[in-house]
Length: 175
Image 1 (cartoon, rainbow, N blue to C red):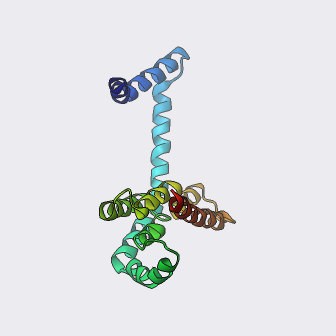
Image 2: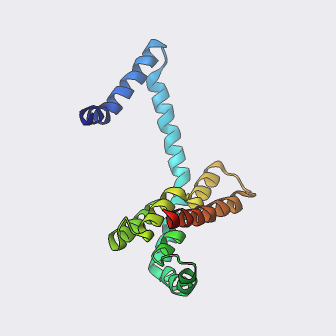
Image 3: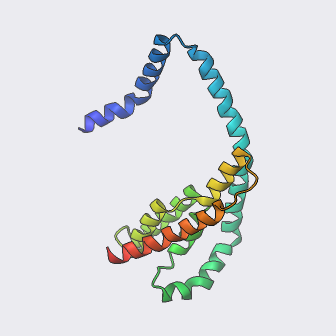
């Protein structure tokens, strides 16, 4: 079975490319023209997204290097202790809403320090898998689509995000 998956993973792109090209030739479609048009649209989208990605990157670096996250961690530690929530989860709770890759680094740090089978490790894994990067998604999607009013998207996203955090803590409490 491992050999089958290895073959599929190595051959997936060439096989899919051959299928697409073969189908286009069978339908007498201008394959190369479609490819060029798609590449142009992809580059336009990349250029439109770039300012939002740079803004999010600067915001994340500002938060982490300024020490604001550490200050928030110190201020909220007593509240987390009363709620029986591990303090290691606080940076993950804040950063997951902004950056998926940044939160994966925090997840890795939590797993290395307390272990994947610990309560904090389990909650961090469930939280990382169950919570969306809402600030990133809103900035990216609304920026590219040029929608001016988010209406209820931010409120709904934050409510869903907080629900994901609470549910991940509750689920891991009983597992």
